[in-house]
Image 1 (cartoon, helix red, strand yellow):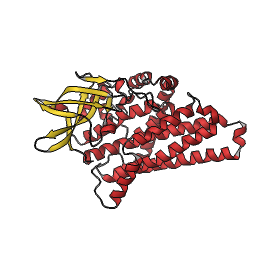
Image 2: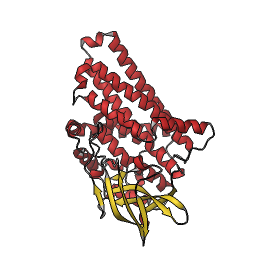
Image 3: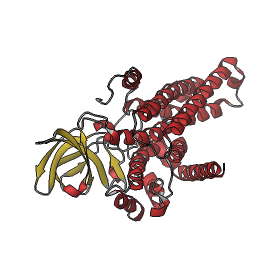
Image 4: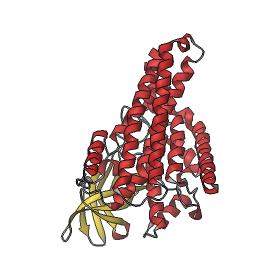
Length: 383
């Protein structure tokens, strides 16, 4: 009981910290959404506060947040700025996976985590678009590899320091494999493109990063994986990454709910039974989605072993949150009425932002097929 209480207290402390930081960055949200520009002020605020060390183990100078604690902090941050919450989650999930590797004394993990604390580096992930079949190519050269390709959806790349990415390589002995690697963004041949102009999550800085004959020494190759396969390492990445990402979108929908309720409270609309039903349905959907996320986080645990089950748990929560969050934002728009259709209204912004959840792997239909195949005893590692 004591350990549970301590964990709950810690979660509350970290969530309150995220709320405080969120209140400091909230004033920049509308401008960045309107202009489609990166949330640079928010990143400076979070960097100065040491927020990027949220999931670094305490013995290395971080806050030691668990998967659940990261998810809940990011859910709260999304109430204040969806773009900041989503972009920073792409850093946090790499840190969570690196902390997982650190606990198993795997090479290179401690050095990365110490840099996050000491040098306040921001890690940029490209796994969402690459997953099992990454873009680009790697060519073997003396002392390492030369890699070329364009990585899309590289969130927070305008503020990033290290690209955590992957490239396919045709190994003469093993055949086609995937090389996981870290590439300093300041490396020769790396170009961060300013081409992010999307419907929602407009401040995430999720433009392309172009790599042209970038040399990656052997010591920066973190793993060699089978091509086109969800191997145990990728299972671990999904277990660490997906719940915090999903939590962000739940937070976005909760912000729309709160804005809609505030908009009609004390007005004649609040006396209308149809509006009352919409408010009740909106809240019920989000509560149930929150319980689904809680269940997945409990099933996955703080230190997940590689397993297909963890992917199934995470995808079930993603499906529940996807359906509920989109429906809730639709309902919020109906509740607010015409005012919510105007650019700059918080419900209009959430309505657009929340739709990004479908584009994180696995997409909803693929996830359902994956789960169905797994339950039917069919192969599921070839995604």
